[in-house]
Length: 267
Length: 301
Image (cartoon, rainbow over all chains, first blue to last red; front, side, top):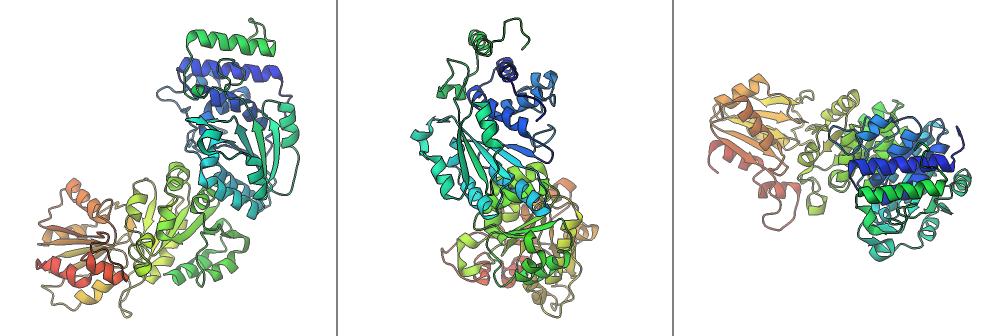
């Protein structure tokens, strides 16, 4: 770990995420806000030989901003988000962005890919860990269940999946669309070690994430879609909506206030 | 060709970057490879989407993964994984499909692969190898390993007469020379034609060309000369018309200004009678048997 992941760091990233989406005039903000704390926390843990796969590719903004927070992408790059001739498409590209190993966006791909990365380390006797961030709606995809069986059978104890459990998916709540609750029980039945944490309690997440065990693990992180912005929190429409200038200003005020950042503090 | 394939893979098993995944197939065929590769032989279970994703993940770490199943299960079931995980990233995963075309015969329609290489080629950047003869397999395996790109290897049965001197694997091979038109074949289907045409009198004997690697990069000058000298050119393949060799060849002829007097395409047309049978039965139904192809060539069908 290079430094403490402070509340202010996270708030600055959240503000940069809002700015990036506002300037680009695009949606998918809600799922990015639910994922941002998790993406930042996982990157905080990444060491030599570790790799991160964003299976919920529609939260690419949270990944780009996390990479920005770590100095791996700059403001010029973020300003190209969603524009013509950019590498930073709404979903991660197959090449050209450090820290983005795979193009994702079609759900149900990240976990099998992560199993491949983890298996490679096993076959070579390498020590690195593989982290895969998934959405909760994504568990509708059968390929994930294939990978859950595979990961357990191949003893991929170097693989940790983190599920952004925000309870909302494309056209309703996860309970309404294809209820898998409780996901923890199902994954445990498949032989995975499961932890359940508050996905916005970074300290709790980091404590759970650093616990080692001898089977593959899942951390089910309860999150709030649109976290930190009152009018977005828990609203399915913020899976899609872009921000107006007024709402953007309100969102910035709320995030600053919650983090104790003054209006003159640089975001 | 499963045995030849297994032997070929055993022959390269000492390459440390090689890893083999099977979708729970290979019983009574791949055991020697399993024994050679040890931990690098992975039965990924009946879960082809995951298998291809895993293979892509391994390839990204520098491995050369081979993923094996019955042909339809290796390209159709995990098609999006081929597209997104493999082709989009240009990762050197090799998909091996056993029983291309109607190879699984009376096993039925679910086990046939009638649109495999067309579908795979549509993704771009995937090299397709279609061995026609047993010795082709080891050469194709070697060529795939020499290149670092995605590949699809379509296996069938070697149907050529035992005594036939099989020329080395190449994208284009002229197997028989004659003056009775030109037949172009993709895959093991050619084996049955060799015996049917080679003893014909020269004026009735066709030039028999074999295509074994796709997409078509180039047309050999001798092939173009044969085509332009022929009253009829018949393209035959155990694959649907869409995305097949016939379509690709017709496009090449047009783009290159090759003069073709009469172009005929015999290909897989599914199940015209709704009945199922051996590979030979389905070929007959599609006009892909040797007698039908020769009739097409001389204009009697």
